[in-house]
Image 1 (tube, rainbow, N blue to C red):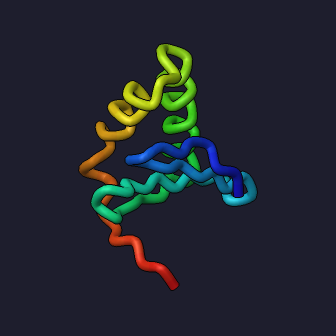
Image 2 (cartoon, rainbow, N blue to C red):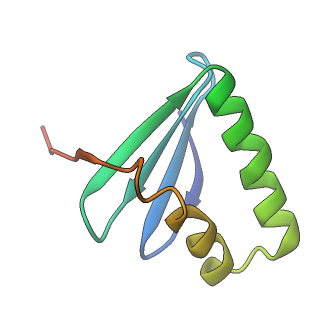
Length: 77
């Protein structure tokens, strides 16, 4: 598990063994998980967003575009 991104609004965790990414919206306490081909496309898009402008505002705006997919409630165990 590797924390790829962490801001006031979002965090992104990479699970290299599973070839997956978890994206969590901290404001809504909801998240999603990408695996396989979708995870690879997400990774490429995330690298592109960071390459354009690595500021938290820009990356948060990029991650907000996944809002429809970030729909699983987060529960602390």
